[in-house]
Length: 100
Image (cartoon, rainbow, N blue to C red; front, side):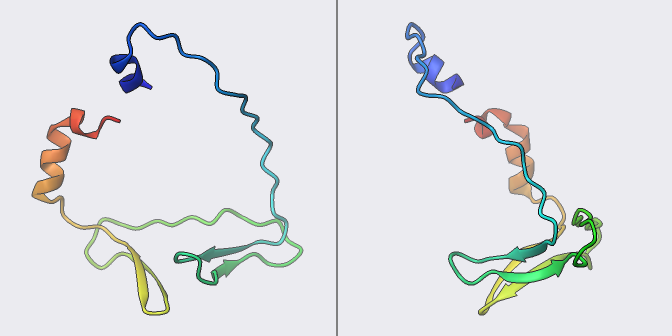
């Protein structure tokens, strides 16, 4: 939106339609999955049937041995900590680069 205003400062924004937001519906008996592309989802956790499901929470400490890896058909999705790279330091030093 900011870029649009910069490109067309004298243009009046017109509504493009309406947006409705529905209330999220809790899932009573739930399973949590991961999925790569359109492959079959893989269940990695589930609630106890008939009991209220508790939130699934991941906590990964900032130490080298921490991490989470999901694998399916030879593909891996990893979440892990690492020391800040020089490229990240440069990105953080230039906040305008990250603006949309």
